[in-house]
Amino acid sequence: MVDVLNLALPYFGLIFIGFACGKAKGLPESGLAWMNFFLLYVSLPALLFDIMSKTPFAELNNPPFSSERRRADGAILARADTWIEPASVAVLIGTFASMVTLTSVMWLIQSGRLAFP
Image 1 (cartoon, one colour):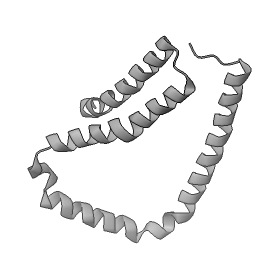
Image 2 (cartoon, helix red, strand yellow):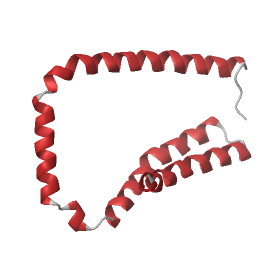
Image 3 (tube, helix red, strand yellow):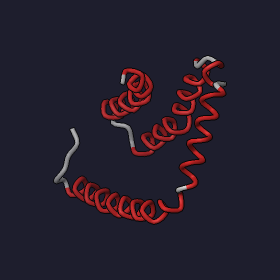
Image 4 (tube, helix red, strand yellow):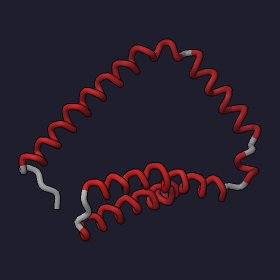
């Protein structure tokens, strides 16, 4: 769990710092859009590159792990046809649910019934 937190905290820390600076300075929407662009297309790839560059090559080039991974992927793909319909239904339900919840939250914010601090 500590490893997961060490990987996720820098990224979420950047998001929090950006949010706090935006609230403190009252940045316009265009400034926040550029901040989102920076987080997604600059900081996240840099964070992933940093993680991969610190990983020893021996761990990246591990033939037993690679062969077991290929074997496991092959076993999963051999049964993939049976999961097509349930996966499609799950994507459809998730898309519909996100459409309803996102629209509702946007309406609540715009109407003033839901306010952020």
